[in-house]
Image (cartoon, rainbow, N blue to C red; front, top):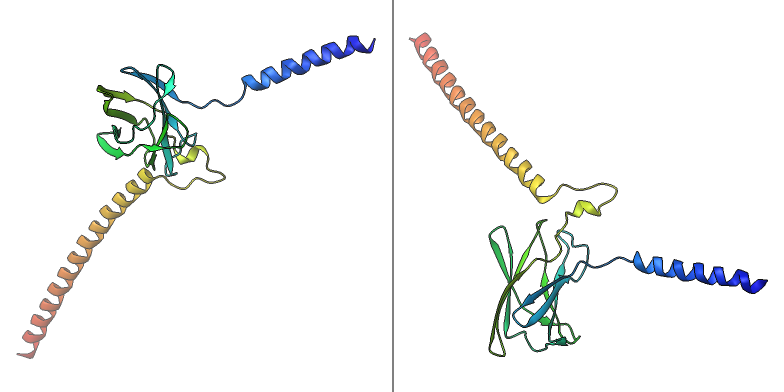
Length: 191
């Protein structure tokens, strides 16, 4: 009788383990085919948050085998909104894996362009790793203002300062005119 009860318990435990395995977090690495190479690209620390030091990670294989020694052959250009950053491939110590240190400063989608020549094969391909998220995604309990909000506030303050400067100049000019008129009035009284 005890054996009949153990079988469902073992089965339930197996189902629980399989379900737990299915709900494990997955890293958002993108796989691309560039020439004869398969390039898997992602971020060293995910999720990727604005203002946090990070690194792009790339795994490069050819015919299923890791490709080492590409740091001198491939150039990495990271682009965002017309701006570019040239990064250097650094071997990670794991065969076929490289990293490119970067500190993303703006949220959104970054493009990674790989160019160069490997074993006489020209490489030229663009990859889109996981999107960079705003720091507000993880901030708790209060969110400091982001860079854009601060820039907007500074622009507003600059406009206010200009207005104050104009009013101060007008006040000085009116004061000088008042002093001149007062001086002229006093000169007339003395005569």
